[in-house]
Amino acid sequence: MKEYLPITTVVFLWTWPAIFIKMLSSYFDVHTQVFYLYLIGWFALMAVNLVSQRRRLYSGFKEIRKFILPAALIYVSETLYVAGVYMLTPTVAVLLIKSSLLFIILLSFVFFADERRIIRSKSFVVGSLFVAVGVCGVIVGKGSLHLDGFNLGVVLILLGSVSWGLCCVLIKIRVGRIGAFVSAGVIFTLSLPMFLVSALLFGDVKELYVAPRGTVILLLLYGILCVGVGTGLNYKSIKLIGVVISSSLLLVTPLFTAILSYIIFGETLTTYQILAATILLTGCYMLIRAGSLVNRQSKVQDSLHISPG
Image (cartoon, rainbow, N blue to C red; front, side, top):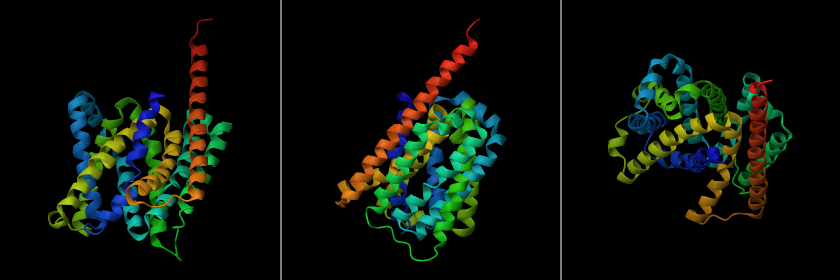
């Protein structure tokens, strides 16, 4: 079960972004916030790579052209995501962001035979249904799902979800030989100039110098942990357990958001949320079981193919 440790860490780290983005929105515009987050995340990734896998990092930069499209998709998805959160409540934003799983499942079914076996399994289908019902219940059960009329934020987040889904599929192709943190470092290197241009044209990079010290510390922690380390661990998880299972397990983040809100802010967990959480966790267990079962079957089949006679 060690292969599930990276995604477990990512689930915790990615519980916070929608809350942090809202907190930072009082001091940073969309383009400035995203630029600084990715700049900080880039420093974190480069530090890890230079210390632990310098040779592999050099090899990654030799194949930098293969990462241009994923970097562009990261730029599009992250910009649209943050802009959408500015226009919506965190609760609505988190629910809409989960729609990226639909695009990931569709693309994975088309392009990857190993993912196709998982998607076709009964445990995955039933588990996905449990997870979908559970995540909606955790969010809607709070009674804070409000959206009056058309909201551009909905469109932006849905478009960002499509970009993110395509990016995750491309990452699965690239991460195999080069490694997770190196791939993330190369992608951040390519996407960072895009974020810089947006910040210079449409934002105000000077906002960092007038923001309160506590806000700057929050920005640093968010950039290092959620953006830098979180992205590297997510790529690691995609390599270990596949893009479909990794993305499906990330659906549990709204539950942790609700729990943290209960602990930190004293928000009440309703009976509906507790029931939905039980369904959600049951679905996650079924997804893990589906992935493990299919992987074991694949290893057995591979061993039979290579056995003599």
